Each structure stands twice: as C-alpha cells, then as structure tokens.
Image (cartoon, rainbow, N blue to C red; front, side, top):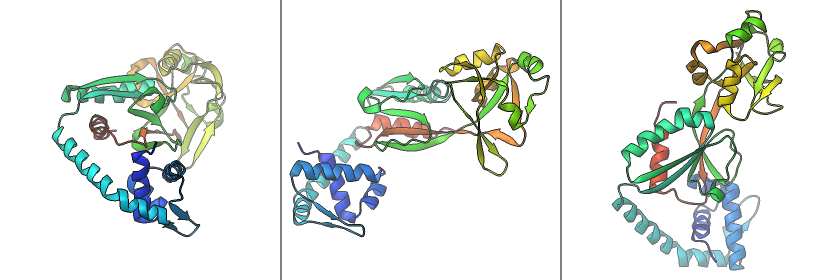
Length: 293
C-alpha cells in the first residue's frame, strides 16, 4: 500500500531536486527522506529519481507521478488546514514521557498549567530514565538529555539543566576533612553515588574544553531521588541537577573542583518524524518551550 506521507516526501525532493534541501525544509533527517522515497519506489516498482553524487533528477515515471499527484496533495493540505483552523481548542489524550527528576521538576509543572488552560486535553505523563520507544509505546512527545541520535525522531532543544556535585555535611567532615573544594585528581578518588556502574562525570574547564572523571563507585541507583537520599545519608558525592541539590537545604553541601564546573545537560523535546503533529502536541510543545529554562 502506498503511503501518502511517502508521496509527500517524494514531491518535496522533486520540487527542490535535492534530498538535503527537502529534509531541511521539512525539518527531518535527510536519511529519513531518502529511506522513505526508496520505499515508495519499491512499492510502485519504478525508479522515480536518478541520483548521482552531483545532482538529483526526475525519471519519466517520477515526472508522471508529480504531474498526477502534486495538485491532489496540495488540495489535501488545504482541506486539512481549513479543518485545523476550525478546531481552535485541542482535544484528546496527550502522552508524554520524561526523565524522572527533570520531568518532576520542570516538565510536570508546565503540563499542569497546560492542562488547566486546555481542558479538552487529557494529559498522561510517564517518568522514567529509560529510553522509551515512542512509536511502539504510543507516546506523542518525549523529553531526553542529548545528544539525540535516533534518525526516526525530530529533536528540538528545550534548554540546559545545570548540574552540581554535593555531599552531606557528615561526609565533608569525615571523608573530605572539612575541605569540599577538591582537585580533579582528588575528585576521582572520593566515594561516589552513580546512576549505573561505570558512569562518568563530565567537567568543563574555564577555556570551554571538557574532560571526563571516572568516579570511585560506592553506591549505584537508577533513580536520582534514591541517589540524593544516599548522598544525604553520607555515602558519597552525588552529581545531580543544581536546583534539586539546593532544595535539600543544609542536608547537602556543594562540592567544587578547582578551575572546573560540572557540565550542564542539554534537554531536547523529541517526537516521531514520520507524522504531522496533532494540535494538542504542537500546542503543548510550544507551551513548554516558552517557559524559562
């Protein structure tokens, strides 16, 4: 069965005679456009485009398909646009997945106000640090720390989340001898609380370059809330979002490293590249992107 979306991607390539330009204008990876056009050619059993290292041009079959379908797709787009304009208020279920800590601290409050504003939308938020397959699990939108390398997904930068190092006053007193300011070498030698064995901490120098520190594992937990609790219990140094550390008040003390700072994590909103965003998803994304990060 021929996919209408595959035809739409082919028409974009035919219009610009460039896979790269078509992908740029559509906001999706070039590899996705190439793969979908190849699938259309396989389905139709005909070569639609001649590709060389220098140029892309239409075959006779490709030119015939443009002639027969171009105006139909334009008419369909116009009908859908008119329909969308009449449907001012979004409705339906919005399924979102986000990391545990950032989701609870940043994404959830934004969705609270979004749900209050758009009462026809039912919001379903799943918090997990696992990479959930969006299409297979039926999610509309996901938030992930970068980089995002999945060619099937569109990634839009939301902002950066500052991270810091911290430990309990007891740990600083007994293990660090009242000296929470460490050298890079000392940091790799103190007991650490990690999300998984073999985790590294990324530090940024004053000149902008980065380096990795391999901490000495003492306690591992895949839930950042447990990691914070382990740090409060005096088990070691933890690397966590700065705002979460600050919320612990006097239970945690900042640990700093000479001439270095913990690198912030870039947060991205991701969604499947193969479909047009429903209005509830587009509005929710715009709502979250408009917040201060």
